[in-house]
Image (cartoon, rainbow, N blue to C red; front, side):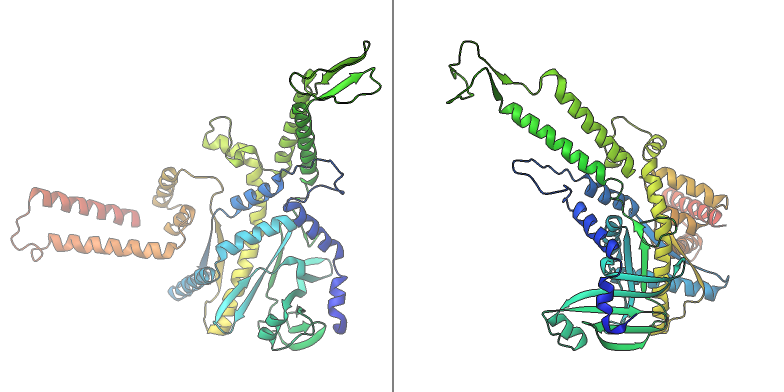
Length: 473
């Protein structure tokens, strides 16, 4: 790449992709009619596209947790894994990633692509995770292997004040264009085509994670959720506008005069008297006669159903079921949405694991941490509401039969910090055992005089402890 004209080269790079992003954003924000509006034309917009995007994103990000498991079976390795998991939770809390991930997911569903940047903030000595605008992201990969990115460029604009504050450089204009160029080995920073910094990559890896909404086979860039529903959405807007116009004209009827060459002072109102020739005929045009409106409504319902089918978001996903459904029946009803969310979660799982690896590497590099070799997992919450009592009963059976560990059961229950919960459980168990021992010892009860109520309390505590010990073993 010619380093002296990098901005102009980026402006010519991926022109079609960037144009498509702008059209998709306009469509999401309700600018869905094509062509210029004609005088007197009525254009209504019922933005189901935005609702579909927000709804699917909510189902997708309904709950997410992360786990770090040691590869080696030793106490030291497990302790390092616990520290790594605690570090992950701390970084997620510091960067408010629950909100950032939801916003990025909506953006990804609209544009078809999204990006995360993982960097180290030297001032706060913390890992920074941001979501740059993918409209300013450019990527280069090796040959036909789209999974091996060797260079990434990030282009964005700053005001003169921001530029001077961040880079101690005063730009010529009110705004400056910044370009960051990253490879595994080098980092270059450009300000309005001028190279202001060049140094070895301090991280040792490209700190960007670029990923698709849904991947088209053999392609790097993804597919937007809007692409399939744009035509149906436009036709629904047109049909609804047409029906609205018909109803509006029916409320303000059109007077039809036959065999009348000239007319003046013709008013349509109660008690109006018209003087017309003998062979003439006058009547009001009834646009609703013959069931014509029913045809329009049936067509709109057909479009409405088509929208839901193509978007893979059944009406039940919006909370509107015309009949009572059991859990299995509801899952069958929502199966298209569930399949769509699962396809997205496959991609997101790889993205979040890669992001977690990056931030752990940065903490090892700049904080001197040693997390060891660990296995990272992403734990997704169930998409549909669960019967908590039934889930607890199932997990209890699986734990007692040795099929699930307590850690796995806590993951299935959606507990965010299973290790801490297990420690609290051990502390409670130890306190109960110690209390039982104190109550049953002569020193704890010198008079050896227990009431019936006291004996019942001890038996209850003992029984509870035996149950705990039995389940633990």
